[in-house]
Image (cartoon, rainbow, N blue to C red; front, top):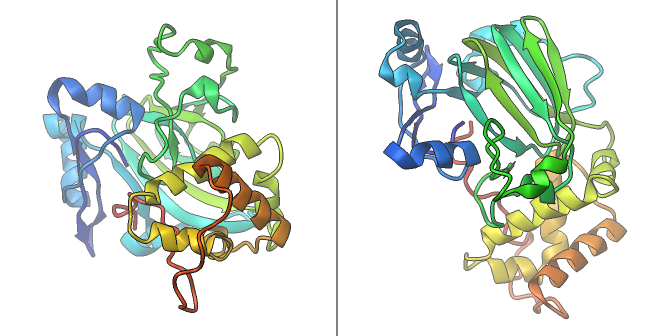
Length: 306
């Protein structure tokens, strides 16, 4: 899904979900390339494909993204086979249909990923997992991804000088190609042709292997930035003090929900210390809720994702 103008969803049992964006005049390209805003509207898969074929104005401002095949396009489910070597599914498979020239803003995903090209061609650029050279948006930015402020097609090295220090791993993906995108690696994808692709989000097998991986170097800096971004997303809500009062429990449930992973006591201690240092707290507030579970630590801004 795109961030930048008006994003739209539609749910048609026969035609699936589609997202589109409507530009906001001069401001649209900047916000789109940085992944900072989106709105939602509805259309059908049939109308979206018709627009692409016609090459009309609406097609140039549209992108069908993150369509859960199981829910939106169940007719295709048997044709999308997840490889046996995938450790543990975190999400998907999802379908994406993009017009020629579509630029997906540079971002990180919180999962290992495979991108598979069914038809067309995409250019992929991967930049590793360092945080500072990619200038992430301010903490508290909505969504599950970290989004870079850098326009990778036209980087402004006056504003983003450290971007000149990163290594870019570049490739063209054609029909039948599959690209592994490591968890928390910055990546930017452009469709060089009208392209249909599928992706999955996944992680290591086991109940703690993936969490152990992201809490260790080299992923710890970017993972901790991602987690603090989610903390900041929740900070304005009334439930935040209750989350803090039972933060170890909140984290335990969060990682079960996200990755089906059980955090160890030492890992929870590390994460609680991270948050306390970030917020400038010497101690957590006393528990103020007696329910079986603490209020959930939520990733804000995922209402569009099915």
